[in-house]
Image (cartoon, rainbow, N blue to C red; front, side):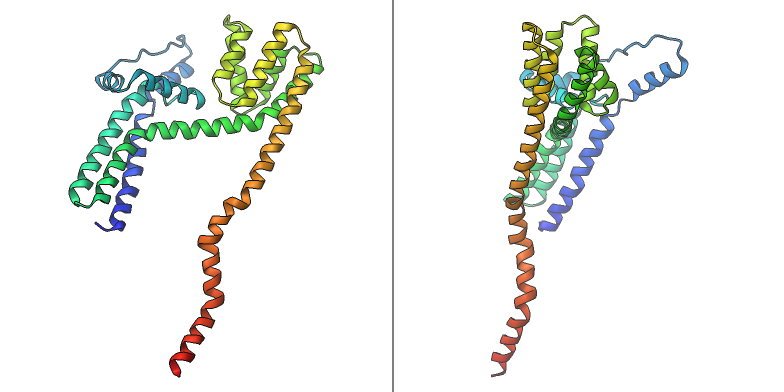
Length: 293
């Protein structure tokens, strides 16, 4: 089988798998129930009971408990999207794995070449791990957005505290004015406190829902300040200064890595074209001259 056919199969199978995952991840029942509650306003909002089907039970049986906890951690990093509950992911993985297995069988039987069999095995694993890749990608984008917003959010909280608000009031103000994932996490932390959770546990839960070292150090500093009675304005001032310094250092680090990242495209794509454009006419003239002699 030619490489063109292999690339065509890959280009077809990946969008088909993503389409199947998108269809399975649509929470139509939850959306319908939410719209009915908002439109009528007559009944209290109740969480619909999820019927454990055969596919969901199969997903739990085929997935080890440690792997289920890992998927739950990826969901926490991704912000637990409404259309991607853990049960639906466990249901989608066997289906996508089955699609990948069918494609693997079709490709493997089409040609006895080893590279074709490797392509089929790749499609099999790709179909099963597509949800993991999507969750990981979404989680990394969310964590990067939170990391960029952290310094400005701490500055807002510092201004609010110095203006006379308490720390929780400053968090509420930053959560109301913010629009990114960090503001959502601050609002969720305040909601944890409102339902009776202690401040220490709420702050630690905030740190556990992220993998940003700067945010975890900030949470640890706030917990220590709350324990030992340190002025929270001083902690915020120091932490905001540290976050700005780290943000500048990350920008400088990326700027220093840029020449190395550009080196490979220059060597493999730009320089050959330049050499052909510059030396091509000279080589042609030389060949014509020597062939005429």
